[in-house]
Length: 148
Image (cartoon, rainbow, N blue to C red; front, side, top):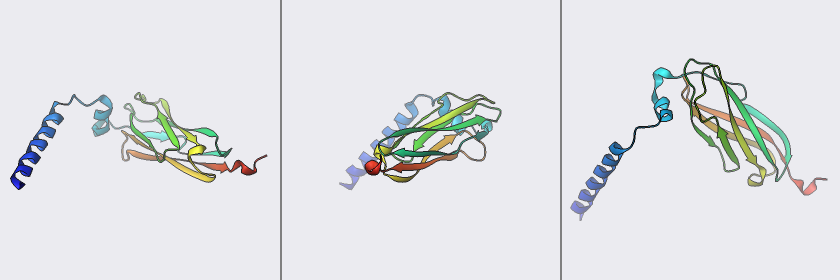
């Protein structure tokens, strides 16, 4: 029994390696993520945003602006919201040196809770010294049982 398990394990491992080799070349975005010789520099104009006060059930969109202050194209390779109440969007095309881009977050308070809110969006970019950034937005969601 152990011998059959070992043989099956070897076959699965070899199949996985074969599939990995047969995959197409990685995309330009994937290559840029690992090409440290061409990393650039990002400047966040907004990395913390307060959306103010909204009523429970409302939606709000927050924007985080950035600029490529380096000498090579800036590529955002991964943008993930910290929870299911936020849907992120971002500049998917490379951002040229000197150009600006934006990461937005559509926040749905129906999927959150009344009270103080602090949510995050994590961004990975081909930047020097640091590749992962945390964008934060805050605000207040008013429980409308008592709204006029």
